[in-house]
Length: 249
Length: 249
View 1 (cartoon, chains in turn yellow, blue):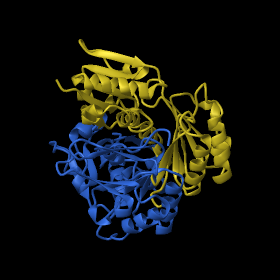
View 2 (view 1 turned 180 degrees about the vertical axis):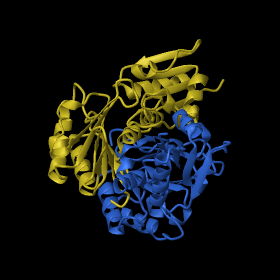
View 3 (view 1 turned 45 degrees about the vertical axis):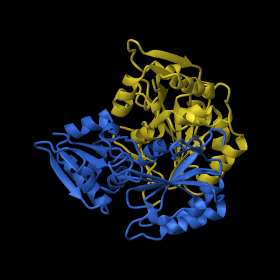
View 4 (view 1 turned 30 degrees about the vertical axis):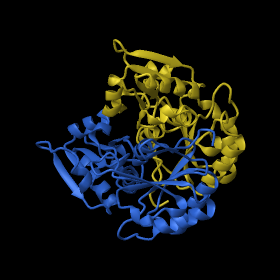
């Protein structure tokens, strides 16, 4: 019996954003491995085993999935969003590189998903309309000065910036520090968007200016988008606004 | 009668990567507007009108779509990949901002899609495993010195870089110039991937080192990924390799 390991993304939440490819992989799996809240989004299937874990043990979770596949299971490693964006795919390959030679011979596939940044951008209009970047504000795995260097480089060169992992209970100050740094580089009126739980029933989209952006608006499910100096706000009848960044910026 | 304008992405090519949300919008549309090769991917539907156009008239195409919606049509503007990533969404909002006030009152929705960069990354392993950026090499709409500044900033700060629009008949030298600039900043062994027509029948994935990367490998359907100094290559039994960028990089 030959195992298989598939690393897939569920998208931001709504099942209408789960790709048919990922849905088929979920159906075909004998074992699901993932952070518990993501597994909770997948309907139960008779005979399918579930291995739910905490959020801060990615490498252990990857090794567990690889060991199951080596033993012959058809394993789906379940991420939110896209599995290659601050999610499980990198941990799986890190485990393969460090693991037994047999893991390099496994049938491994990564299936893309709708990332939080693109789902949030779609709700807002077209804020990523020109060059953009994604930065994780978590300093669990990299030093904070690396984050600062990247924020400064990206804002200085005119990238629109998507901030992943803006805050958690253990990392309360990073987003405020990031805003303070960005205010040194970007105009005060630069649009900032807080997109929380996008496409889920409790979705919340809030707009601010950089000089008034309040870090306390975020939770673990928030993606923060910071425009470039070229990003524009179009007021809508009824109060809301669209954000877009012109292609020529 | 109230019109509606939906801007959607078909994903990179395979129908298994078209979201159910976008598929439903294609079904519900009275009019499809888009670049001809994208419309060719959508099955014909009786009674549905198609407005195919050339690739270099995004703003005209956006205005045409908005005028149809204003007149009561249910319009789907069709992009490849994700509509917010170097595609039609930004042109639509640019047209709205410059257009008649009635366009701001229209029912407009953007539906995300699987972008070429995430589909390519999935095929390669997990090259976008840490902070990354996307840069269009087209200087049709922005000056080349802006592109150079962004390439230098991104490579210098350790971002993995996805290069969109690497070349066309009218833009033959830009990718070579980009590689030359990146070689000044990044080690010669930095992995580069050429991902052409990802998920389509003629998909082609090629790996190189930055110091030997040949710009002639690309066509209009190629996405180029340039690793950071931390991006790693894992050799596979049988010859291929995975690329991944460790989360702690």
